[in-house]
Length: 264
Figure 1 (cartoon, rainbow, N blue to C red):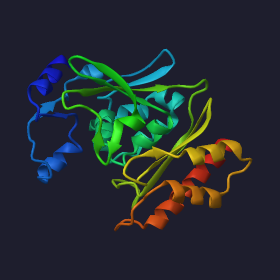
Figure 2 (figure 1 turned 30 degrees about the vertical axis):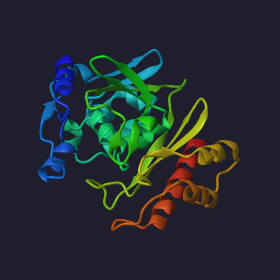
Figure 3 (figure 1 turned 45 degrees about the horizontal axis):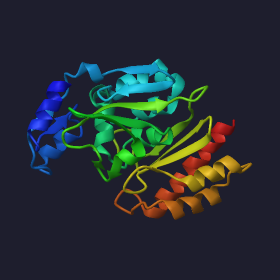
Figure 4 (figure 1 turned 120 degrees about the vertical axis):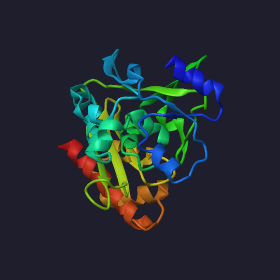
């Protein structure tokens, strides 16, 4: 890892390359003119899944396949195992990393709703500093993060409540596989109540405090109220894949479904 950080610090134009499942297509399509890459594929020290001091720690180079298959993840945050199982194809899941998915920062990324609902933190490392920041603050816009050019994402850490995080991840695409989410929602429950985070519904994945307050205070959630709260707090677009109104309907329905499944 120190060699990779040295390379990034020495060349202000260099980019880290994890698996390349996001970056290589961008370079192929000439959507980015920087071609100096620091290959991280050999960084086995960042390929791990551990539970220490009440926290689930996932190295940035852990693949979606290893997370989806991890007994620790299935026990403590099963929604993340499910989300990772929805990423791309089997070939992509065996190569693509959670660090690459997070740093690509697509609002449609499958792991982000679960991680943000679970209040995950990103741990970054440069030659001089090691910093920890809430993932919701780490992602600053569409495919942009606060990660400095001379730094790497080291790991994702999630505080696990007693009994683990309950709940699930829900997504809708244009087909069953190899498709970008039209709308996605993670609805989780921990020791401090229900959390909900939304993907493909604005420039970043975000939690909605008003939805969480409603779900934690009502006796029985109503889809009509969840639909109003979604419209008030989310900003989906209309495009070739779905209209804004359809995305809001789907998000409200997924939230209601997650609430009902937690109540069972």
